[in-house]
Amino acid sequence: MASRSSCSITLPEIMFLFNRSLHSIIRFVIVSVMTIAMVLGWSAIAHSQLPSLPTAASNDPRQAPSGVTRLGMYEIASVHSPLDRNLLFEIVSPTVFNRSQPPDGSLPVEIRAEEITQRLIRALDRTNKAKQTPVVSIAILNKDLILQLSDDRTTRPLRLVTVTEPDGDYHGKTLEELAQEWQKILQAEVERINRLFSHEILWQRIVQAMQISIGLVLGSVALWLLRRTLIRKQTALEVRHQEQIAAVKQGVVKRAEGETSTTIHTIETSEKKTDADTIAHQRSQFLETIRRQFSLKRQLGIYSLLTWLLFWAFILMWYIGIVVIMYNVPYLMRWSKDALARPLALLIIWFFISLVIRLGKTLIDRLTDVWTTHSSLPLSETQRIALRAATVSGALKGLITFIFITFGILHSLKIFNMPTSSILAGGAVIGIAISLGSQSLIKDLVNGCLILMEDQFAVGDVIEIGDKSGLVENLNLRVTQLRNNEGKLITIPNSNITSVSNLTRLWSRVDFSIVVAYENDPKQVLEILKQVSKQLYSEVEWRDRLPESPQVLGIDDLSHTGMSVRVWIKTAPMEQWSVGREFRLRVRQAFEANNIQIDVN
Image (cartoon, rainbow, N blue to C red):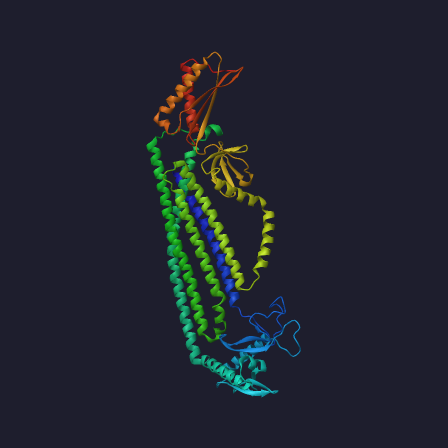
């Protein structure tokens, strides 16, 4: 008994450690993908001082690229602040219908906007180095109105923007009015940059960022300690849960182990002596074990929910802290808009996907609970359903996890403007290649699902598969494991199971046949068999194993060896071997008492 107890504790611990490691690997991969996606989203694209024409913006050169609005003969693009990418004003250029071959002297509006942005970045650098606030002024260069930046460190002003006729036409203003409007906008921007980069404000913002960083670290430590406490309690509950699952499984197997002798030929066990009260007590104990198991699962679900909330609280805390720091520190304001775009969209997508997965798993557990705890079903069926439910629910949970994670990956790729259709096509090709290389594995999984759905057999059944027979000790989507009469563990891939004989499904039967000599009176032989059958059926200790009275079919065959007499005895599942042994013993004693001769040829 001691060795059995230690084994039952060790097995759940091994399964628990395996599940924990698998979940950790999956969580690590998901978090890594999210982190890489965020880094890509935050990365600024480096441009040269004079960028070339965009060739990959669109497959059709006649279409306007991203960020450009086309209104008839004009195309509009936005100019943003080099500090925090706030909108400053919009510029206009004549429409370029074929960007692969632009007209001579025509500059696409996105190239013009990029040039202005690069000049504003140079203006930002000059503003940081100047002792006094630089001045934006209006000047004339080659008969064109321009806005230029003058500072106390250089003698040559920096040309910022050229005000063109399309600009004035689009905005409905004269060039002088538009130039004065843009001058005020740029001057206010220069003064704002100069103020933010002053030593006093800059140092104040840096100190605030450091305080926020320290708060993030302390908050992370507190969340980590709380999460560690929850994980410890969850680990203890998980071990208890695995022990109960092992106990349920072991109860079915133990109940079946002593009953598999005659058909598998030669396992000898002591006969069970159970009455109706004992069976009812066992059934109530089993249902109570199932209820405790689901109670533990609900507690595990609560701890898992709290751990999940702490995980997302950690991510949200760091995200908000980083965004606040980027909005406060002037050197980081350039990427503050990016921090609110793609990373926030990724967080929202994966939060709701993980939430839907958790809700789906909870719904599966609730349905499994309702499916398993049937008070009207017999004990054997309740045990079968309990063991089937664990495998089916695990398969369903894995399926919904795969579906929603795939959905999340595709939406995440859309955020980065990646062609999901091409990825799906490539994935389909790879999937076909993998399926061709692992056809047997796919067949195993499909056939395993069919076995579970159709309830062909379950753990604790005695089955025959081809020339293999034994007690089902383990059943999953890939393999079925049998224990034969010699104690050998036989592993059969589910794809190899084309036909199966279940010897213990719902009810079983003893097919008793015996050949008696011609010298015996046939009516006397049949009467003796009927008396033995009635006597066996009338006893309380055997009545619960016999749903109905044995049927003496009569003389089944006549041959030169004698008369073959057959009796059918319908029994409860797994009881045919003990009933058959008892019936044979009583027939032997009755024949001896009445001088019935058995054929000895």
